[in-house]
Amino acid sequence: MEFNCCIRKLEKEEREPALSLVWKVFQEYEAPDYSKEGMDEFYKSIHDERYLSLLCMYGAFVDEKLVGVITTRSEGTHIALFFVDGQYQRKGIGKKLFKTVLSECVSDRMTVYAAPYGITIYRKLGFTDTDKEQVVNGLRFTPMEYNK
Image 1 (cartoon, rainbow, N blue to C red):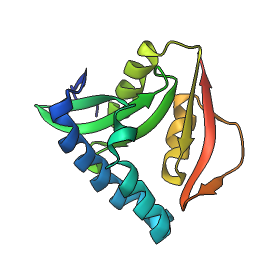
Image 2 (cartoon, one colour; image 1 turned 180 degrees about the vertical axis):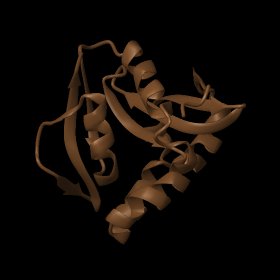
Image 3 (cartoon, rainbow, N blue to C red; image 1 turned 180 degrees about the horizontal axis):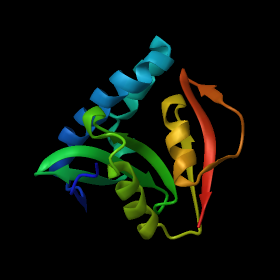
C-alpha cells in the first residue's frame, strides 16, 4: 500500500527533527552492520555543522508527520543521507524522495556511497556498483551510481 505523502525541501529549523529521524533509522537498520567506530563516525557526521551546511535536505510527510529524509550535496549529484522510518518502508516513499532529488540533479549522473542495508534499495532504483565495498573510519559502503 502506498501512502499519500508530500515531499518538500526542509527549512533550517526542520533540520534537527530530520536528523533525529535519520539517527533513529540508522540505529535500527544500519548500526547492526557497523563497528562502534563506524557508529560514532556516523553520529559525528550528522552533528557536524560544516558538513551539514553542504547538504540540501528534503523530507517526506504523511499527515504532516516527517517519515523520510533524503539529502544531497554537490549540486544534487551525490546522495549523502537517505532514510525512511521503518513502518513506512516498502510503501513508495523512498522512491518518491529519490525521484524528487533526481529531478533537481544538475547532472545526468548521481552517486551514492551505499551502506550495506541500502544496497538492495539503490539497485531497485537503478543504481549500479562502481567498486567493491569499502570501510573508511568504520563506515561501510559500496560506491554506486545512477545514470539518467
